Length: 511
Image (cartoon, rainbow, N blue to C red; front, side, top):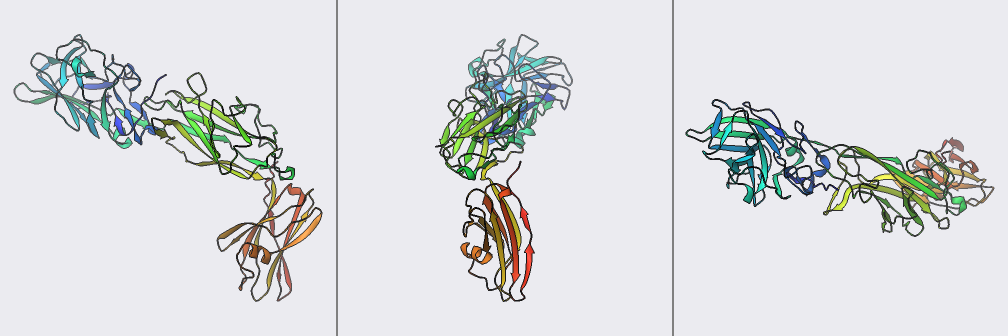
């Protein structure tokens, strides 16, 4: 399995190339033997704590797609003036960031046309924006020849050696920079003649990198369900909010009063350097402790999260992507789409609390101490649903009480359900919201009057305001919407006038 080393504010790069030149020479970038394209780097890699190696020789995993037997760059010479340059100096210039080569390694240039003979070796000088390679009178650059650029272990970087010797995975060039630096990075090769008067004989420049988001996450089915409060709140109302016949949703919704389903899709785009996503996960957080009576199955595969995720604490559950390529996962650098389903099942005996859910998607969670998230159109702590009491909800505007005119508002509530209910009032006054106010019950087959002054007092606003103040009121009654009737009336006691207030039904009944 390929391991992708990451990027960060410290970004690794090697001479990748592509492009034209100021004189006539050209540079090409090599990625697994391919040339003529820019290196596509995942935006997700650019985080403060990660490190990415974009350029280098590697026979192992650290620098994916770069092999010890392949150069990271090829230079084709088209010399100005005479057809050869001896005792040459080559400058590899980087336009952004700070460039370095690890201790014990050197950049070399070999004559591809002449048995891969090493004809230039990086000198010991230290520059922050370029790598300088020197030659001597014994070796020449020739018009029309192709030259490969490698990073080799210092002991294998000798002028005149033919071929190259395998280097380990520490053979790379580092460019410290940001995403903006890398996206605009240009690499220039300058060939100088140092025999006699120094003069530049050829130059070529490329802009090798481009960046793009690698991951996109879309929620398809949220954890939205209605708690059946008429059945001790131990199950959901039998609506089509419930479980799915299949994990991918191909057979649609079914009525399941003991479960709820969340489904999300991860779309992955092709990059050359990015995250393999193999240890990715979705972390769902609830604002209630569900661990004692809720089990979660992943893609309908298990009765609990064993093997695919566990309750992290009382309020969180992890949904992992899988262990390797053979299981559904966000693996690799190629384009793919993966759908994941989590089924939350209640035990049928425990009362279900009203619960809000949020979720985060993490690419390679906790890998090397770094967590990655999608880089484009992704909102952390996204709301992914809630379990609410199945209820009748009414909204009334213009309710008031108090003042010299003895303004009063009454709410008439009739209960035709099979159990006593307690209406819950939410008052919005002067921009302040007062919630979960109760002032009494309504028995079965009874009508009861509730006074605005009592609701205000229960909310701790005031007994009776000195000046009548208008407020909005939301009335929530748990149960079937068809079983409740609400009428609102305002009265001006001074004039003896009555006014009907409109009642808007926003019941959570959705079928």
